[in-house]
Amino acid sequence: MKRKYIWIFIILLAIYAVLSLSLPTDPQVLAKHNISQAKAHWLGLTITVPFVLIYLTALFGSVRVSNYANSVKASKEGPHLRKLASGLLILTFSLPIISIAKRILSYIALNQPHLKPETTIIKNYLGLLLAFAAFYMIGRGARGLYATLKNPDLFKPSYFLLIGPIILASVYTWLITAQNYNQQGQSAYFLPEWLVVTTLAIPYIFIWCIGLTAAYQIYKYKVNVKGSLYRHAFANLSAGMVFIVIVSVFIQLITTLSEQFNRLNLTPLLGVVYLLLVLYAVGFGLVARGAQKLKKIEDV
Amino acid sequence: MVVANDTLYSKAVMVTEEYLGPAGERFIRRHITTHLKIEPEALDKNSLRSLINWLSITFALLTNDAKNVASFTRDLKLLTVNGK
Image 1: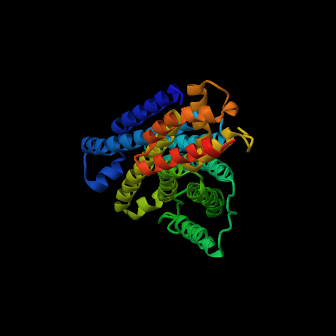
Image 2: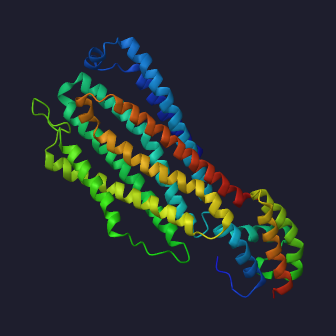
């Protein structure tokens, strides 16, 4: 992987850290929790440092996969592994990019309250765009990798497997539209409900279905690929990818609903987000370990 | 890389793929060109005999399972007896 990407990522992390520790917190939030601006900065530090460490773990995992994919680029699996690696890199870069954008947009909304609708809309669609780019690449990579198997089973999901996406779609659409309006009749997304459903709910559910299908195909590849040692080395990579995709889906689900959850004052939800981010780091750790084992086969 | 099915090299690739999957061909090709300095398709029984030790030692770096290493070595040795 090119060194310049690593430097860009580190610069993004530095920007995120500086913004997190320097931009003022919304006075309404301070009043709600009865804390001073200085105390809020200290609290910010306890959040920023773990986040930066998690983001670095994600970078480490992505770089390892990228290096492995580059080392086998001429093989029939190479192009598909590179797509998987690109998807992981987009997912990794989206972490600081979204964090920075949120900080800046929240600051703009704080100083220019009339711009709150625009900043909220930009935040929501930026997340959607990056999630789509990452899952699209992961989906293409997983599909291609699965197709390299000599006798891939036909992907024939049972009718009962459709229940999962149906529940996901129904619950998500219900959550995104329920509690959408506050007492002043203002939408949490500053968009009409039909637009929220068609341009946020449906695309997100589509993206998640791509991601979950990719996770399933990577798992099936691991089960069916030839070579006892290779299968063993691929197991970590496969488990990490499945982990990352599932955790990403949950993080995206919670963050798109965060405006509504904020209104409901569900602070424990923040704990759930932290837990998911830690699981995210575990996923990237597994991916890094798997890629290292696979790279070793190519190096000896 | 497309390999003809009836050469000793292709048989060695098939054996290696049983253990190293898609990485098998790259593994054996690398060792033939590095240690024997010949084209992989030119592999014959004598060359393979001299390569087996290298392959076994390298394979042992990838796994702690001695049975697996012994089985891999045995399968390759069989080719020098029965291979073309």
